Image (cartoon, rainbow, N blue to C red; front, side, top):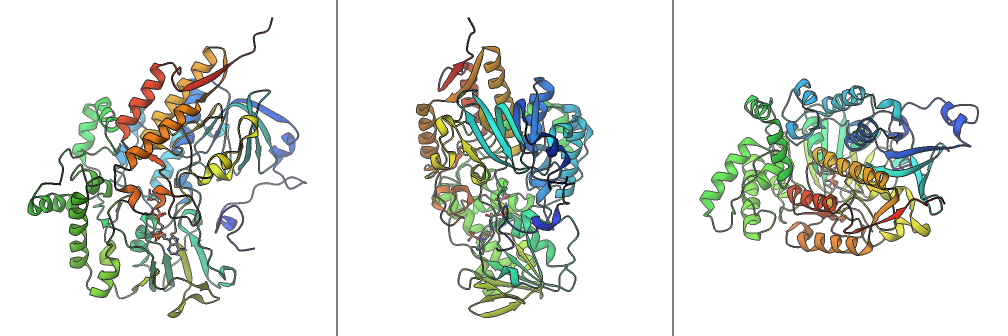
Length: 571
Ligand code: NA7
């Protein structure tokens, strides 16, 4: 078996401290309960941004009996796992946090515009402590199956530790970008050095000094760790399969004027975040690039380049980069010229220059292109010369063997659907989620799927393509309202109708095909995973418009597009 083969890959095997085991090999808590089914009102899966807020909302605000499950050994989700060098948010932090508690916002002092992993993890730890959440979370525990019992109309959960739980409602915050993608290059077991995946990074420091390092992959994770590792290591070889358009982040301290503005009108700030397209907290442009002169466009691009941010470059410059070829071409021409200016060696610059549309999740990183001017960095075109195998000493391509001490896979995720499909979900009449989603994911409002009653997916497929934490809160609040509605109206279950789900999918497709995003291959449409169906997986009309749909469902008191089952009335 490959060393990646267990629950997904990589150093997960070594980095998480083993659980305390009882005589049978199970944890003490599990020993006590393995034969019993423990009943709760709500089960929450995941303890990242989404799961923690859902737990707080449902347990502390609604007073429900809630149990959360987390496969990591601590809270944090993305920010527990992604500890690679350079890992940081690339969303302006004032919008990359919880909004519902103004005291929390005022008390927590972020140090930087784009905080590092450690700072965000500390924030989530503080959040869990502030609301006393950890006592309701079982860590180091993976939900293996979730089965809807048609008789009891409850979800039955089985964990990898043998525990059995029963819940009326199941809320999953399992992570959009969490199920790791690891190349299946043969020979990984034979490698004499260290191998890591960015999203399963060990909890100990990795010493790069004097080492020969390879980074495979140049998405958001790859570019962040490339820029950070290069100055630390002996030699860095980057295996780039597809070049991307990368603009500077322009990291720095938090803008005191922005903090002042938020302080002066806290609710107004969040209303504007949630009313925008991206929910990133910056002013989005309402000006189209199409029809403007090249000089006028370049002036705006240059200004944005200097103030930084990937989503900002795509959405704060003009309002049609994602929809108009003319606008998109203007943006890509500008970035291509920057690459040529910034990279000294013309051959390297040519390899780094993309020629496709600018229609993936936009990336920003400081000093990325400049990194290739370092004498200790080599760029390999991994499309022309893919890694054929991992050897004892390094990796082999058709150009020969590259000797290495450390291999870093920055190869991304089985995004959006990956973690949902790892759990064997069975809905009404035993219908399997894996079967239902065999050709594409099917989820109404990005939250609920027909035949899977009382199952809520925070940031499930067909949800908004936006900054996540504020959207998590909106979705969890909506879920809380639905659960309250069910309980207060003597209902047992609620689920979307098939018709509503089909209409939502058709609308998501219609909107997506008015943009350029379906025209490039990336994790956004599933094209990064061999064999995965390529499909629209997001609602692309923005956060403000998405919230209108949630409000409409609430206003109809879940009459439109949902069906419910009532509690049996005893006579
Ligand atoms: P991404 O954005 O999916 O990037 C993964 C990178 O890894 C990308 O450059 C891929 O090339 C490359 N890749 C994947 N498989 C291989 C193999 N087998 N060989 C060589 N290169 C490979 O993942 P990230 O973790 O960087 O970021 C994901 C999101 O997390 C990001 O958008 C943020 O929202 C946070 P490809 O482009 O597929 O040719």
